Image 1 (cartoon, rainbow, N blue to C red):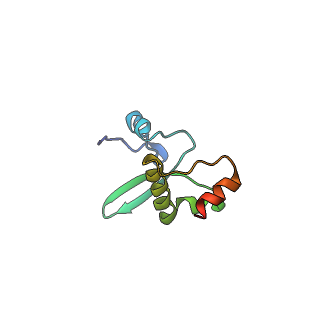
Image 2 (cartoon, rainbow, N blue to C red; image 1 turned 60 degrees about the horizontal axis):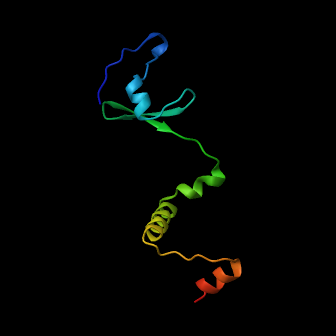
Image 3 (cartoon, rainbow, N blue to C red; image 1 turned 180 degrees about the horizontal axis):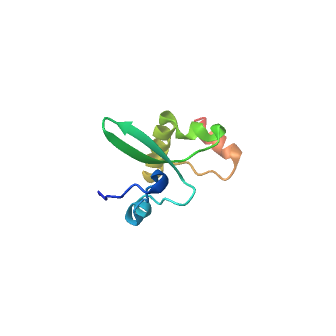
Amino acid sequence: MSVLRRIQRNFQITIPPAIRKMLNLKIGDLIEFEVVDDEIKIKPKVVMNKSQSWFWTKDWQEREKEVEKNFREGKIIVSETVEDFIKEIEK
């Protein structure tokens, strides 16, 4: 999608409604500006607590996808107790 916008006073630009909706942008969201060659790229960003950043590492996300695949394929263990679960995984 391509839309023209005019730079207003104080160099403000309004993000078109269709783009705001597509990207689910809300007031107060963060966006990143990056200059690549002669273009400006604008990307929505999210700030998270550093203690939660491990979840979004490439390695962890690949393992999450593997778990989801195993779940879809029925490769799961259902246990009534923690002790039963431990016995099952130690097999």
